[in-house]
Image 1 (cartoon, one colour):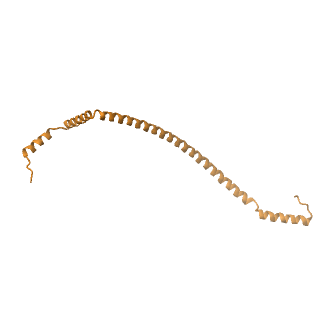
Image 2 (spheres, one colour):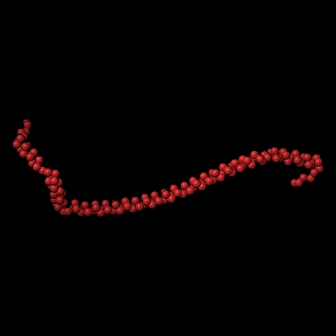
Image 3 (cartoon, one colour):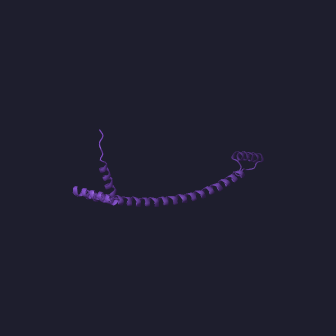
Length: 137
């Protein structure tokens, strides 16, 4: 069975819808909410006030967190400066070590190796004994 739709009613409904503006719709919605608040004994307003208070607490907590982050940023800046100072000192130490290595290398070139020194000392001792020279040792 098909329902019969009254075309005149359908046209009439369209005219009513066309006359409602956005402003009127907003006013109807607002009135509905305020009416709802009254019917609930003002509990919506009380809830709204509690939520506002909670959000203020959250905002205060975020301000504390922001302050802590600023402190952490300051500490990281100090640590970064210390690392830069250590890096500079390390460069100086590396440069000094390079010069020490070069000096040791030159000394080694001019120095007689221990085995050769022992060999020379044995020969000198042998010559001293043969010639009857008393050793300085």
